[in-house]
Image (cartoon, rainbow, N blue to C red):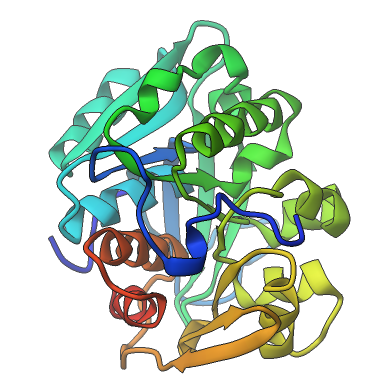
Length: 308
């Protein structure tokens, strides 16, 4: 969660065509999504089945929704709020960690299920690729009862974590939040979050659920999965026939900005030596949204995302 590297077809809310903020008063960002305890294990060599593999292990506050919120605050958005659900086991810790990063936590405490936990296994090789073992825990139990339209007071943008679409109760919350945002003219963005879970849900089902979203921020694999196309750039262009603005993250190749079936910009990645790619896409999304809220266009905002 902390900023470790530094401190429906024709859908949308109607405002993404001009990349404006919401029509209501306020400059805030509301993120709705997962709050997770990450156990990050960085191992230097291949995993040794049936015995020990030496690794550097740390426990940190994380979750895609929490990461995006923290990076947006880190990149200058003064009013960032996060709606999430946690267990009693770690509620106070997550609340402190979020507040320390400049985020206003709106955490629902689940008395029955513990906080979600992800084991992040990071390859110590040149790509620093990560593999997740995920127990969504309380984060998967966000529900319409956890939503209040008052959460949008003073909010100029709503961002939804794609993990919300992978459980029945949080899918219902997405429907309620989208309707509330549409009624107030608040633009909505969404990051698909997980190619693995997305494959289980199905591409067409996902695209039906995100009708009304104005900005989609998929990874390269997610864009290809959602379109059935092998070329990630072509996939981004194709997706922009379903969502008004698609900003597809391309890893070490930067990002692609697409509208109306056409690629409008290719943004190069910032030079970097990978150490741990956990949360890299969330960093991009948080910085991208912060830049949009500050008045940047999508191409410049994507460049900020790449730098993050």
